[in-house]
Amino acid sequence: MRNLRVAFGLLTTLPFKLPDDWSVGDSGRASVWYPFVGLVIGALTWLGWKMTMLVFPSFVVGVVSLAIWIVLTGGLHLDGLADCCDGLFASVSIERRLEIMKDPHIGTFGVVGLLLVLFLKAAALTSFGSDSSFGILLATTLARWCILPAGLLPLARLSGMGADFASGFRRSFIIWGAIIPLVIAITLGVRGILSLFVGLVGTAFVLWLAKYRIGGVTGDVFGMVVEVVEASVLLVFLIGAQ
Image 1 (spheres, rainbow, N blue to C red):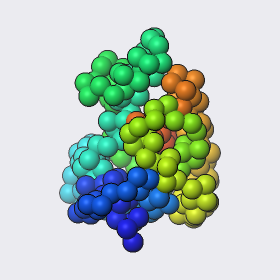
Image 2 (tube, helix red, strand yellow):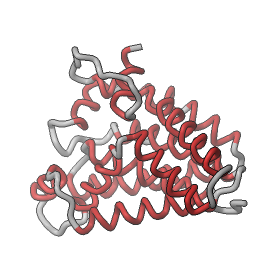
Image 3 (cartoon, rainbow, N blue to C red):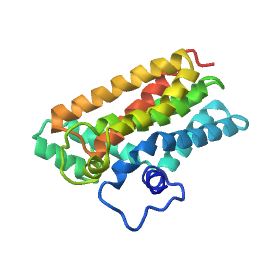
């Protein structure tokens, strides 16, 4: 169960301590569990949404639920989103874009990207009804599965989490990891299936952008994939929300 422990330790703030004897490629070997970890994040977020719905007005529910979501993940993927917005959209050389993405400071594009995604998520969580709220489960698990096919692209940087992921990743993980999001999507009906399509389109766009702008992927690109897919799925589940 080492790989499961690594997956929880990397992707959540839940009390799963990363192993002291970290080996190169551990993040990639643990990736087969990423969709399951996403399901747990989604379930806890949905539970928080459900409980706050009993007490607070919808606007407060959206904000509190989003706060729970962010705390559960430690804002990990939001950081990647901000770095990618700053770097990928900058009109500079590839080398300079990579430097910007590695810089811990956040720029204008990063702020705008963060605000757009956070406002969209909060708006969706505010607008959801009991039925549409299950989209949270699909959003979190599908988004983390989408990291897996992203691992097939070349690396833009030969060090960091992206490189560690690539060294342990296996193509077969894509198939095994797809089971959970597929089951959830089918169970949720038309919006679930549509969410799969929209999520894959969003992933393809981010990966194309990364390949075009920096020549491949990094750990930050994985974070952007997660945030774009999550927001896209929530947007789909706003259709007919009641």
